[in-house]
Length: 287
Image 1: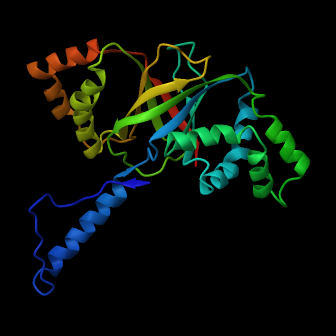
Image 2: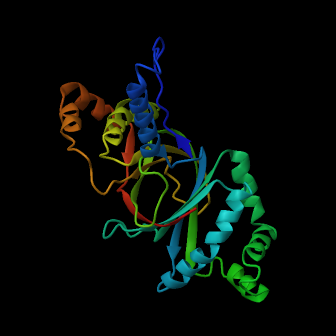
Image 3: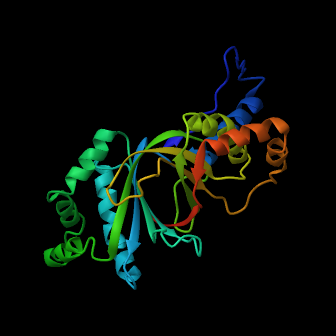
């Protein structure tokens, strides 16, 4: 977990006298504590595998039971440093694109080396050994073997995208919980200005909305590798966390976007990439 820190800028000195400024000091401590608790970033990795999972007809129940079985195993592998995090999202988009997956899994890592080691760990018995350790005394070896052998039985295919974090706003609300809402926008880069437009034109606007509690968070991702069955043209993704009850209206943002200067910047942004329809998501589980 990476915290948003509150600190003074250069030249800022706090002259706190215990006798005369105790009240002011306590208020400052309370403010910093409140902000630290409120604003935490849940994108706790520089790299991730985003898996788009297409489930077989009628196989949702079996697939979700398999994910539930893997929950404690994910906790153990995170503790062991195999991965940093793992969140399963159900795709809730309807009637927009028949090629959308049924589930999205995001597995986070600190480095490309950790990601590569994670992939390699699946080629041996490491995950089965973790399962046996986690379920020792709770499930027979035969039952564990059957569950581990069923990986892949419920899905038609998985399209994997290896992504690198380019930039992100703080994410509010702490860790993911079942029912939390999010979205992913797949993108196709059209010119070399694209990443600067996203981070220097759009990100400052959306970050203001995050700090006001109107948006949950925004992350900009570069796709640097993908499996052969993944969509070839995709180059980037934007990930958004939603909030259930925005704190204020977005009139300030709308006013900025309606200005002549910003409209010209927006024209440049739109010319720099193609953005596909958003894939809306709901958290099933998170570790």
